[in-house]
Image (tube, rainbow, N blue to C red):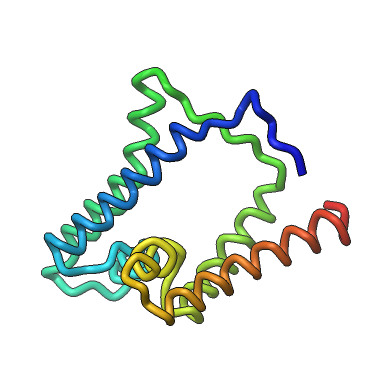
Length: 144
């Protein structure tokens, strides 16, 4: 594996990680809730009237922020190496995985590990191992 030094951006990655960490910490401190995106989105499927507004605002922020970034001159160019069918299937499998794992990478990986939760450490290790195995099988064994 080689690093493409022309596109390696450690400072922006560090800044993004700091923003995510600070936002997750503030969310816990101010609301007493874990910023797990699958839990926030899942709560909209069976909503409690008092929870709808903050959940919609949270999800809207995730959708609106990259749009605003593109509008103000920093479009995000994401190369698509898979078909839309493969992306939809992957999204569904991730959704199933978040239900089976009782949370997602934001809940377990960002919030759980920062709280030294053993359950979150195991869940994150499983997420990572499954991701590594999937990439190996799809790219190297199946050649897709």
